[in-house]
Length: 112
Length: 236
Image (cartoon, rainbow over all chains, first blue to last red; front, side, top):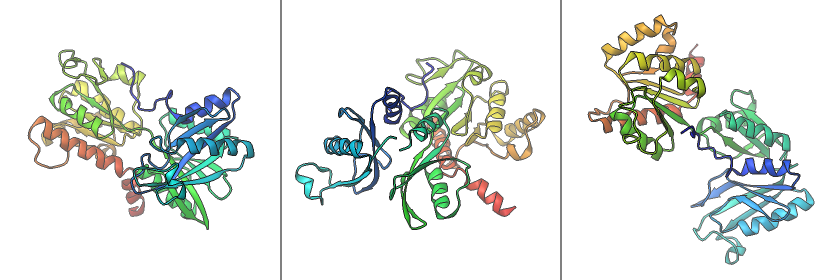
């Protein structure tokens, strides 16, 4: 019964990102930097993505992860960070958006 | 993100130390700030606030936009005593978002039947603390009434600077405890950090009500970390 902390190294996106990096994979990190209204994941939440499109963690309840992964692949290519915004006010709401009615800003950057 | 910063950040998190990753959103540059590191200006004020609240967010400072991602260790509670109050405190603490574990060398008290799904150590606190020392993000409630069991972890909690230290017992019991701890080399100032009688004064009577009072006091202590120290500094 030596399990105590809630820091789960196996599930934690930032530990996964570090491990992927050590394996020599290209890694992008997406972070929720702002939320308005009812957002499914709090500010500071991470989704990490490799160049094959594998991902771990979450920035929403699964609503916008697909779009973030696509953007992350571009970020990995260009090396330039991007700010993404999702929400019902967004014109993309019909394609990808937050059904809960909230709005989030996601910052996507390359690791290294 | 700088790969070295990610490694450092993860190392801090593993060691249960608070850190904030600060990203300048205009150029993507980042830095890692540990609790206690001096950062000047508006950014420093925002960082200080983020350490205290544990909340991440964007902030405007020096004409730029920064994102502060606050990584605070998950707060942990240790109850000394597998007693009736602890039986109520354990599930309540979990609901409030605290990990809790219980230490009591009395094997009749520390049974899995009385504490289902709670990390339970049926050993002397001294032994457990050798393997699992307290840290600043640990709150300690001594609930056995027994000096042989309570005193050592109380001293350890004060030495470590645990964010909360509480001890069950009447004023009379506590006065005797103070004498003993003074004898163990604890200073008067440190002793004033012990909450005793334990719990917020809500007239709690039953074990479950006392658990509510204790948990409320723990939450108050956790959310005001650093504020008391600041006030003392200003007064001095």
